Figure (cartoon, rainbow, N blue to C red):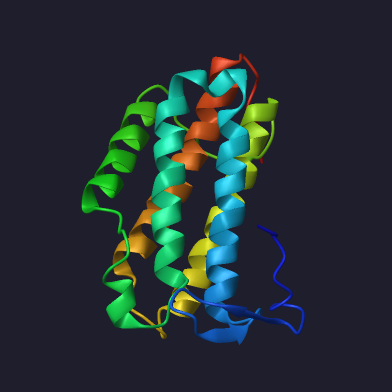
Length: 177
């Protein structure tokens, strides 16, 4: 089977269900940004510093496939048949955020991204997550996605505390504004 179809050569693509839309459609932009985020999470999971979180990061990637799929369709009857993250996915993120936050020193200034490489990648993932969240908000006028919005919001919070924890775990000083 060939990977190329040539059907997108004119700037259009298919959503799940076959509807053709422009490649700059807000849905395509949203699930494309979620795919980009998924790649950053995958890269983050390849690092030695994140090995204790590899299972959790893999779960995030699976959740992001479900989140992205919800934006890749504009037919509600098809959307209802797609996998969806559960509220437990959000609760799991909150538990991880709380657990990591307990290990972090209190901050009184803005944190400057960077430090160790793993922290830098987590910060990159966080910024892409925030962009995905903004795109999802734009898509909200096209479809209902409250659970997905909450998930992306919590994920960006997790990535923030995770980036701080990675610096502390690798004995890399945090930088503040």
